[in-house]
Length: 369
Image (spheres, rainbow, N blue to C red):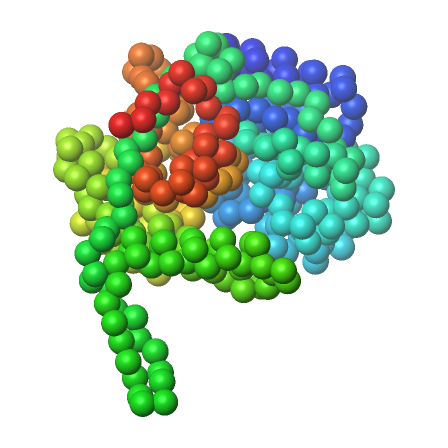
């Protein structure tokens, strides 16, 4: 029995002793499915709710791996959960922090309608705001916690180091802006830096307006974020890093499909769901892969200890899930230290996003280049 096995069983016992409804806040790569098998029984009618299809696949594979009789286990995506009309003995909500406001309401209505006595929420990354919201709306407190730092000490997950590479936005006027006027179509050239500054100024003006137009402000912020997502300066910085680490296996997280397709490496996203490309990287046959909102949860990568984050938001939960993809403990490489490289512009707003996004991680392990 490994240290992980012992800790999983202990936390399962702690969860049960604390009540029948709660959230297990267990660091990413802890083994939440194995943990859950110590709480449920083959006789229980178990409903597992999940946000991504690969998570269901992980459940099916792991229950088989751990020889758990899963004949009474059924599944539902969070998107389809509102259609569930049948009773269960145990409701398991994997990645509970990803529930939208409507989905939280769906879960609350289901628990109330069927008087569900046992609810297990699972997550490795929960912000304080999300924790409070789940407590208020679902009456689910966090009953067991296992931090990233404690898991590193126990050798349940690998240690990590984070490097932040900062680059200025491009000032070259190479982007065409076209609009229709009374004289016909007109256009002019702008730089990503110029566009970003102009939007930032408009947002500032809107904030101090006597009657702010909140809808317009939201659109301005989304447009500004899009400049960050597609920044050519960040693309070039990422390509240089890929060249620098050409002999290593590297996973790259991007914000747009067009960005991932510019990097000169295989990509896997909603517009290119090539399963061969995905599986070749997962199995270690290829060394580079760029993804967008794919394979962030429920997936194990073989012999991977380097990732590049080309785009991030202010969500600590989202960045935590990305980084956890490479912190899995490897018994054939016990001294592994996961290397996370984050590419950021030098704009104050993106620096603020990054500060919030890194709140789950130790400042001592973050280096700004």
